Length: 131
Image (cartoon, rainbow, N blue to C red; front, side):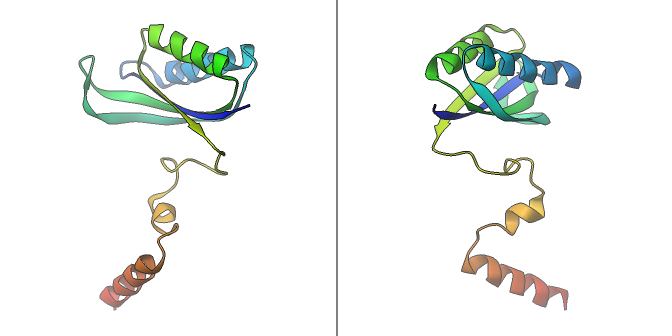
């Protein structure tokens, strides 16, 4: 089955428990239609780049799924009809990365990632600045 990543943005006036309940609801929709949710993350309330339905903030949720396209289409359809969900983004990926998503990693871990030579120069420069 194809692999997908989904990001949902829910209204800011929901509680954290309600936002996590949405994750469970859409995970169940995928499971009921023959797929499975490999991983899910609740990213918390974040500021939006622009207003969506008069909201400046939203609850972000991230799902990784292994599901047939019919299950994904049904989940997206129900998410678009749900009053609490403002936006849905689904992307098909070749493989799921292990560990937490980039949004959940600590800033230091992200910066130490695959930076190549430029990263080593930056670390040397920072070390020299401290001395």
